[in-house]
Length: 416
Ligand SMILES: Nc1ncnc2c1ncn2[C@@H]1O[C@H](COP(=O)(O)OP(=O)(O)OP(=O)(O)O)[C@@H](O)[C@H]1O
Ligand SMILES: [Mg+2]
Image 1: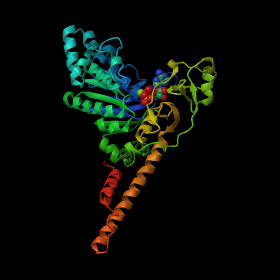
Image 2 (image 1 turned 45 degrees about the vertical axis):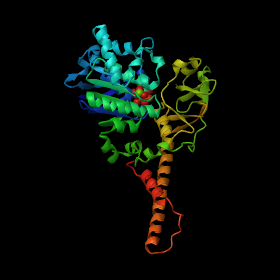
Image 3 (image 1 turned 90 degrees about the horizontal axis):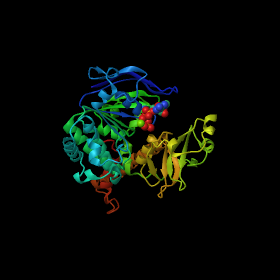
């Protein structure tokens, strides 16, 4: 069990990242922290293994106060997985996984045998063991990251958006394998994501956070869906979950804002001119998005000179103009500026969109789907009535109408 008691983190610049957080992550279960970019998910997670120290409050791991345990000792019992896996580029896959056991003093042969076994366990072909991380796909690298975190067999795992950087199909495979693995291992897991669908799929318990680091609701997925605590949670989980059915709806109809971007290498002053709410999008020569630059609007910006890659916040997934509403929502929720980046087919920047805009479009679409379902069902009913009363039915006119009504009704059904 991991218990957070009135935990607050205020960074030296005054930002309150986490505000009096109270919750208990049960042993042997998956607890998910979910919320938009900047709501304090990573900060909360890192306070558990003391990579970040709380400003106030306490964190308990079973009956141990985390503050009373040396960070190095604490982390020995806590596996940590991050986005992009964070693998050592110059070590083979096998050595990446064996690193921690070796550090803990296990002999080389044993550590490698165990690493090999773990790779298989996370669904990786043993043939990959000799490769270097750059020779693997994003999804394979994430599997190695999970294997590495499991290598010391820690009772606790902290996972920070481990599946966010891969495409939706691979993400789903990773989620399924992760659930299977957890079924065998029964670790105490705290899992961070900005994706409410992922939270609902993986979480035994889900903590919904809002920007400012306050807890909006802590509940089981079923409870979140049936009894959202307030309008924020209701909006976030999707009032009727209608948008699940819209996973395949194209987002081409989204009202893209013609946000201006600034080129890498230009001056921070130029970024300040185009920034909205303190964030400017930076692109390369081909107008491909490179990341977000935070500008504070003060004289300090101007003194900083030109825009270099190390100044950029790389958070946020990209959505394609021909992509789905689901992707657009994902891009908006994961973006540090709150504006999702949409790109053309050639990868060049097309515009931005906010979560509110995507959600409005989704609401519109699901209302439309419901309306269509009702109309189709109505037409079908009238047809049946006519058939019943012996009135002539125009043959062929409604052929397949029943199936159409059923599928339309299904896509409006919150359970699908
Ligand atoms: N070292 C720091 N100094 C000052 N503020 C910080 C620092 N690290 C994070 N913050 C701020 O604290 C808030 C929470 O950040 P955190 O990284 O925990 O958010 P998050 O929910 O993980 O976001 P994301 O989804 O983008 O990863 C943000 O406003 C962020 O800018
Ligand atoms: Mg984070």
